[in-house]
Length: 171
Picture 1 (cartoon, rainbow, N blue to C red):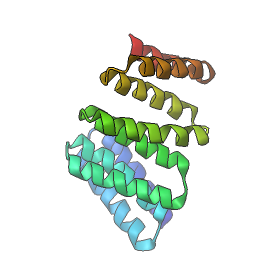
Picture 2: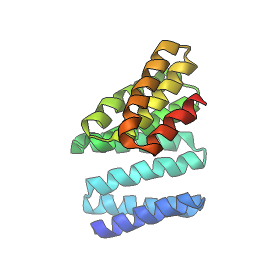
Picture 3: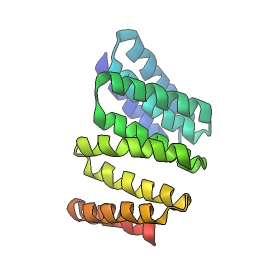
Picture 4: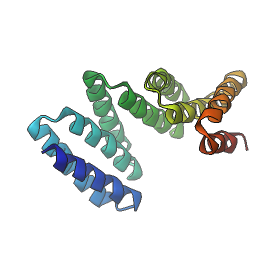
């Protein structure tokens, strides 16, 4: 059932948080199989997104991307811009951390309007900071500065945590 899928996804997320990655993968794969079996597209998309994170922790990059791409396709089919933005953000960080700044820029740039449209202020803030990092890595200092200024402006509305995110980038 949908509740079982939610519990398994939460269990997998908690296992990941305490570095029990093989157990996390097992829980998430069980959630995915159950979601597919009963036709729960939201559960399937969530399981794929969570599996992407687990495989990233295992440095299994092909499987990370495979699960990110499947999650993104499902969230698009479901018409959920918030979740699409979250997955694109994750993909952007993945590509940034692997040094593929062009693809990171495309992913993060696609995530930003989705997160804005979803009124996800924290998500917008984190995406702007990640975009600033990518622009900086590409030597595009004016664009990096613009992203950081937007993030700083937004941080005033999300409180101290938002300011900390921005300030940690410029420190």
